[in-house]
Image 1 (tube, rainbow, N blue to C red):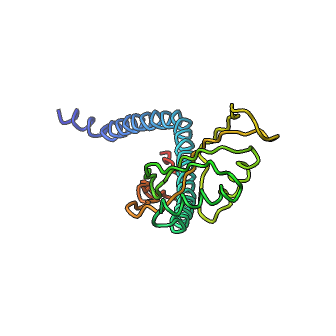
Image 2: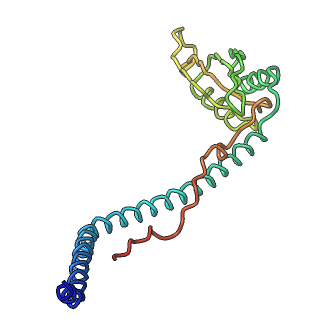
Length: 217
């Protein structure tokens, strides 16, 4: 028995070396399999990194566009405020009707009938339309509308209808009937214009650089 134990102990180091070699081979094989798996996944990871970089560039470009849009909106808003301040605070029907009538008389258009209509709030300003009916020649009405258009007060010729008069003509110039709608405007003190810039959602800051690449083992 002692002889058998002695032989076993003499061969023990061989058994240990063989077991260690087997274990090392198993670990090495597992490592090779993991390395092969990572190598196979590398092209897909590269594509994901490129796609992430593209998305990052698009986000940065979008943020730049938003900043430029904010500047443009603020400029438009400033222009609106400037125009708003140039409008009168009130509209006097007496003054406007008197202006329309005097211009017509100055052009020998006796049959002119301006009538005020209801005010229409339109945001930062209020529109006041006037319906004007008249009878005269085409040239008279052409000059009449040109004078209104060049007035210091802001007017807008909203609609215009010119129809030949059916009554017998006493003049060598064709008499026509004019129907027009002319708007004037005033400042709307009850309205506060907003630029809308504050409503634009702020995006989170974009970090520089693409997502890090995974290191191979």
